[in-house]
Image (cartoon, rainbow, N blue to C red; front, top):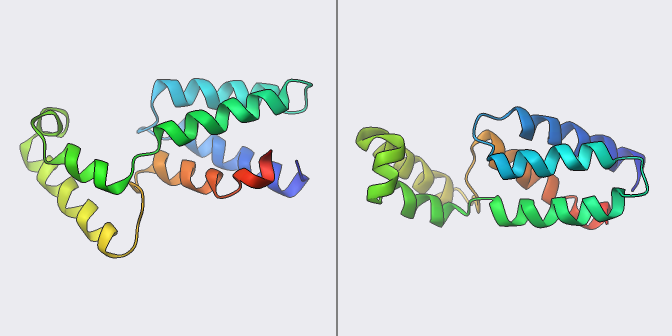
Length: 118
C-alpha cells in the first residue's frame, strides 16, 4: 500500500476507533488491522478489515428505517429518534448514501481508498 494511502487510512482508523458510535466488532477489526500494519499479515488483515467496514456502514435508508422503528425509539428515545430520522432524510436529500455519524463518516472515508489498500 502506498505510504500516503496508508497514513490516511491509519488516521481515519484512529478516528473510527475513537468514535462513540463505533461498534465493538468494527473497533476490534480496526485494532487488528492497525496491529498488522507493516507485518506479513497486513494484506490478510486488510481484506478482513474492508469486509467488516462494508458490513457495518449504515446506508442512510437503513438509518431512516431504524430511526422510525420501535427499536429506534427504544435506542434513541422517541423524540431523538424523530430527530435522527429527520436528519437522515435531510442528508439523503443532499446526496448522502450513508449515515454521517463519526463512525460511519470514518468508514466511508476509508472505503473510498479501498481499491488502493488491496
